[in-house]
Amino acid sequence: MLFDTHMHLNVKQYKEDRTEVIERAFNAGVSQMTIIGFDDETIPLAIEIAEAYENIYAAVGWHPVDAIDYTAEKLIWLEELSHHPKVVALGEMGLDYHWDKSPKDIQKKVFREQINLAKKVNLPIIIHNRKASEDIKQILIEENAKEVGGIMHCYSSPIEDIKDYVAMNFYISLAGPVTFKNAPEVREVAKAIPLDKLLIETDSPYLTPHPYRGKRNEPAYVKLIAEEIARVKEISLDELAKITTKNAERIYNL
Image (cartoon, rainbow, N blue to C red; front, side, top):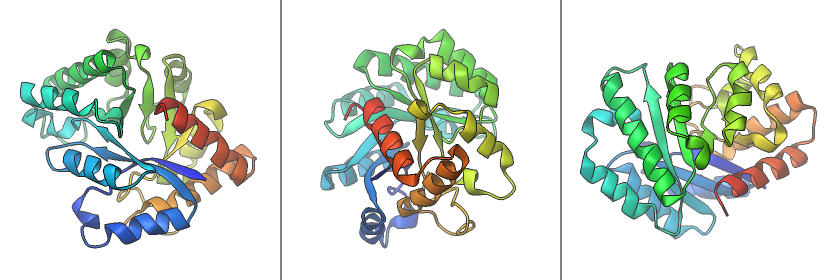
């Protein structure tokens, strides 16, 4: 009974075989999934897929890489969608300093607006952080994101920040990198996350876990991530599955 809390079955990589990918996930013991919409194309499709499956939910937000394309109309649209019965969170949102499509000041403005929308509609937020840990943390504190809490998706902030995010009512989610042979630091992060604040995700089609690294990821592989974290935490896979599923249901208000 695993819960893939963050994946993108709404992107073109699954256009030909989305139904089969979903079936494989259910057959692999993935009982629930959240599909993340992040732009004009993927947001409607996230909701469409969630409507078609009882155990698939949607999150809607504006990705920081595309902050330059954000308008006031997008905010109104996201607010309308936030009331949809299958929408369980706003995001992913945040900051991305790896790509330079959108200037940092615009990214920050769009991030702040989405946090404030989440507080208005009372939904948790899903945070994308790429090479922007200090600014992410500062904005979450300044905007009092603790009010709604949320998920640090594919955690990449310093290990010592975990306690601060937990204090702000955030859950910490780990993905495929925890299985990478050359990423011992991610396993140290896994050890440091309190069990009652731990989530698992695939971020499919990206960040494919070992031994499929380099190929397209899919939600069925969340089991590989869970197995590695269970090993690191020295608990059974069953226990880890139960705890992380309960955590996901709690933050998504299911």
